[in-house]
Amino acid sequence: MPQPVATTEKQVTGDLYAEVRTFYARQMRRVDALDIEGFADTFTEDGEVVHSGGERQRGRAEMIAGMRASLPRYRDICVRHWFEHLLIEADPENTGDEDTVRTSYYTLVALTDREGKVSFQPTFTVEDELVRRDGRLLTRSRVIHRDRPAER
Amino acid sequence: MPQPVATTEKQVTGDLYAEVRTFYARQMRRVDALDIEGFADTFTEDGEVVHSGGERQRGRAEMIAGMRASLPRYRDICVRHWFEHLLIEADPENTGDEDTVRTSYYTLVALTDREGKVSFQPTFTVEDELVRRDGRLLTRSRVIHRDRPAER
Amino acid sequence: MPQPVATTEKQVTGDLYAEVRTFYARQMRRVDALDIEGFADTFTEDGEVVHSGGERQRGRAEMIAGMRASLPRYRDICVRHWFEHLLIEADPENTGDEDTVRTSYYTLVALTDREGKVSFQPTFTVEDELVRRDGRLLTRSRVIHRDRPAER
Image (tube, rainbow over all chains, first blue to last red; front, side, top):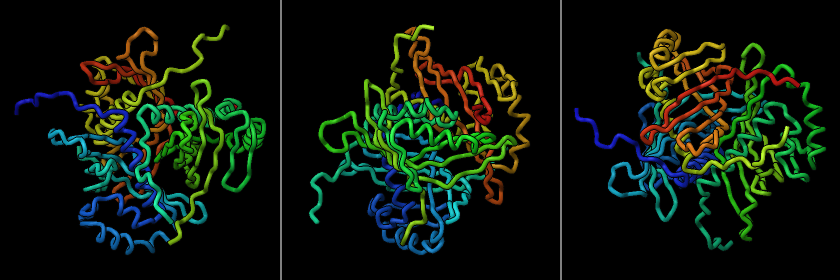
């Protein structure tokens, strides 16, 4: 297979890095506050989430219904999502579309109960496609992968 | 209630993002090294901290005294503060004062004992007001909130 | 001892901040995937790692051999490295060499077993020297320090 011509990855600018981190800081505050409608509003109207078990939610209404169903689980638990090792690629298709951004990141979810005891969910790796509309980022697609021991 | 006119949040620049992250990287190295005086020096002379229990420390001298009193707790423990989902707003009052910066972030404190066993304190969310003096950021005010299960 | 003339630290730009974070995001994806050769490729040919116990690996071949020997430990474990409080200094010797970058950061390693149980290794602080070759960062030197309770 011939080598691709471009051997250097596109650099993400500092401004885009800050913009994407800020987007996630706001989005995660909403999900961690169980602000379901506010969280859904950070997705496009036709936004899609594929969960690690294969379940797929299409559109804000399905997302809201899915989250509402799992609310009782969080009654006595404080949830905080941690992200790490964010990769950002603007214009991933090289079509000059700087308003489409692909990202990938690690997540770790910390759960604190009413007594202050902290536990953690297994780690995940997430791949998002973001779009910028009216100067504001939204998630169009999210695919969540449960981390598994690497095969070697 | 009328909608505010400005619906788009001000974007944080990449340079400011890096500056604030670097400030916290230095400030947390000092607190985690139990360098109490060095930590106090990252606050303004009249800096104020409101702890999650409501206790308020005003000025570096009070901060130093408070931290000194809690030193014995850390004799056999290595403390590391982790931050996430930093939000940064320069000139929060829209007065053209770019040397005032408001921030908010999650914290998670990892404690490692002499045997290498790791435990975690409950998570917190912190709101800071930073000021830039002679080109260098300092914390003027910090309010620490213990995270609680969300009410829905 | 006379005070140094420059009392203000050099500011890291947003672009460099994003470049370095992106470098580590790629490097850690490789080590966490147990992609040993791919991980070694993120070091210079003569790259060096000094582990917290004092063991030193010189060059990619030694690194690969060392990692291969420890692979069985990770057979049923999913490893994820978390970084925090990254400090970045370009041109650390003030010789105008912007292609040399010194960094320092906290690490926390999360281990998830096949049942989804999460545990953590003790925290470390790492000091790296990176070099930019053909527009791409590589690690030339890494020194890993196990965090210990601070002496006061």
